[in-house]
Image (cartoon, rainbow, N blue to C red; front, side):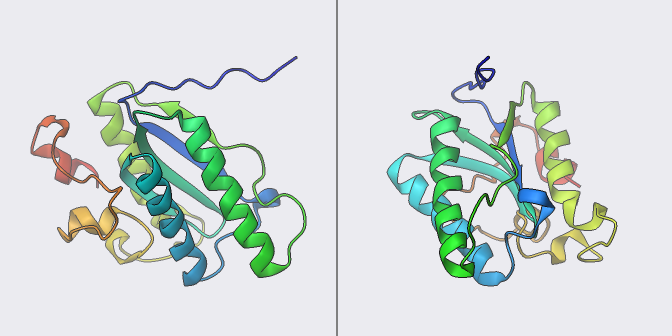
Length: 175
């Protein structure tokens, strides 16, 4: 029996996440974290994507991603393959880097988008051993762009209020 076909809704954000095989760390240092952003920028330059929230933890990642031209399966297949190649070469690793194929689910409403964004942004403080005391102090999460009103360095980032209509609550509901 084949796998269930992945649902992709163009123009809708999807919560995408994947974990390291056996929960192993797959983002071990700042260079690994920067490789994630380099790959996402490269993908964006080839086929535009929009990300409104992300959190890269040591053993998994979360993205709120939208693509209009190419399916999420193709985008994330490219990302996971290229990151795996990078990781295997850097660490002389053989075998699976990711535990399984990435998971994704479309976000059906603006309220759900806010809830998933909150969940993603709280990852660094919601673990058994919090990585930081305040969410805005975790450098590999998009929360800093909302809380500190920083302009994202990455062309794929969309932090504008038009994500959920004209509601000014977007900026503050992500906490």
